[in-house]
Length: 163
Image: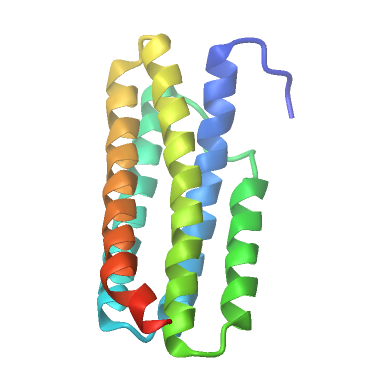
C-alpha cells in the first residue's frame, strides 16, 4: 500500500476497494439466491445480480477514464459483510426467517455500497472528474433503488411471513 498524499490517491484506493468488493459480492449473490424461498425475493436477487454486473462494467469505465489500475486493493469490509451474511443465514431454520435474514443482510451490504459510492462520487466531483462522478452516481442511484425495493418487500411480505 502506497501512502495517500491527496484526494485523488484516496479516490483511487476507494475505487479499487469497491471494484474488488463488487466482484466479491457478485460471486456471493448466487449462493444467497439459492437459499431463498420467496419467489418475489428470488426475482429481486436475480435483477440485482444484473445490476451488480453493470456496476462492475461502469467501474471499469471509470478506471479507463482516469487511467488507473483496477487491481491492488482488497475490500475487507465487503468480505466481512458477506461472511456475516452467510453466518446469520445459516443459523436460520425456517424458510420465511431465512428470507427475512437475506433481505437484512443484503440491505447491510447495500448501505455500505451507498456510503462508498456516495463518497467516491463526491471525491470525483471535487477533483473535477465530472464524467466519472456521473458514472459513480449511477451506481449510487441503483443501490438506493434496490434498497427501497427490498425494504418494501420485507415490510409488506417477507417479514410478516416470518412472524
